[in-house]
Length: 189
Image (cartoon, one colour):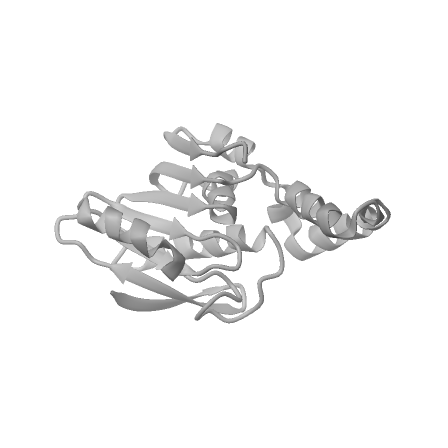
C-alpha cells in the first residue's frame, strides 16, 4: 500500500492506496465511528482480489489522522475532502470511483450527494443511518435518558454551529439527488 496525506479542514488525514493493475475502478472506503481504515482490511482485500484499486483513509481523530472525532457529521466532511483530493490528484483523477461505507461511513457515502456527484459510479452503505443530528440526539438519549430532552435545544445549536450545512444533509436526500445505483445493507438488530 502507498500512503497519501490530505487535509480535511485543518486536520491532516492519512490515506492508503492499494494499486491494482488494470483496475475496474477505484473503491473509496469510509469506515465507522471510532474505527480506522484498517478496520476494513478484509473488505479492502475482497475488492483488491476482484480487480479494484482501493483508497481508504482514517477519519479526523482516528488512528493515524490528527484532529478530533467530534460528531456524526465529521466523517461526511472527511469524505468530501477525500473525494476533492482524489479528483484533483494526477494519480487518481482519471479513475472511475465507487464508494463503500460502514456505519457513519455508510451515512457519509449516501449523504455526500447532497454536495456533488463527484463522478461516482455506485455506492454501498452498510449499517448506515439517515440523519446525523437525529442519530446524535438518539445516542444522547441512550446515555442521558430523559435529561436529553432538556439538553436537546443546546445540542441542536452546537451541531448546527459546528457542522453548518453538513448537519442538514440526509442519506435519503443524497440518494434522491444522485442517479447512481446504491446497495443498502441494514438489519433490525
